[in-house]
Image (tube, rainbow, N blue to C red; front, side, top):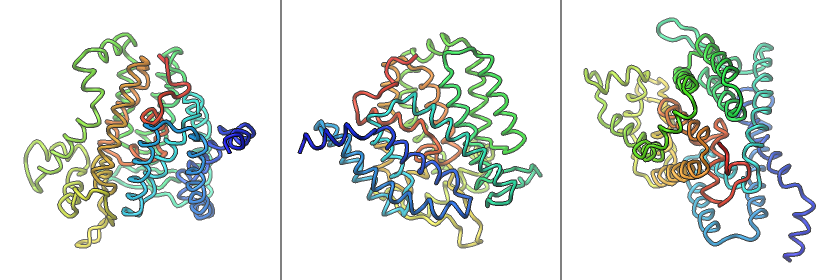
Length: 382
């Protein structure tokens, strides 16, 4: 039986199988507003997810006991939360992470950058042809926000931020002026097109980073206190945002309410859902994001609260521990570019959902270091 499996594996290019599956998952995410593609892709993706389970078994034919235990625990809990929440987003990204064993990390980022950029251009072109169901929005101050075919301007902003971070990682050892120009272009695009505050904030942080020598950032990261804070940044941010959300008071005139104004009432919305739904349900719950009293849609945009409410505190804690392990490995490899990117995503997730549990954030595949001791293209990267 073992010889038969080895013969099959030798004839199959596992990398091509992985990318075949991943491209369909990425397409489902990016073409969600294209009616003639969306329905077909949804059915295909269900098949892909089942196929990925068998793929994970194939690449792990010689399971190490600790790897098998972790995969079984995470797969079981993630599957339960998917059924309870009626949402497959987290299951989808978790299967991608588990399937990443034989994949080169840097090669993956390069391929994702290429596919994502092509799909982004296609969606924008389709929007000009009137073949998408995107939503343009006007803020209360009159600012017009364009989605260019995506579901929401914030999603368009998220895609541009992802492409920007991928470009910076791919070219991390090249000259800074070109990186600086790319970030400036992305920043101006988001200021005048999407007006996505989360993306604008993230891009400004990247610009600040580019203004300092790499040695300065490395020195800061290696400071003992900073090192502890960075490794635990996802835990720290989650605790802080829950404290703020629990203590938010309507019509209050305090520090928390001023923060809520800066966050476009996200704390108010989070407080609403926390009070209405049990945040301690172990495997999450299905939440219809609609206020039945006035029939106005209330967004649940803070990733940490969104994930905890929908997928449950058990899954949230397990996921945050995976981030801690990813930071630990990045420090071991002195991969400061990856450390920066993970920090950026932790801050972005304060304002927007999806970056912690969907293919919008391709850097989530780095969490595979939790399951496997070695990931190609990730070790010894500066």
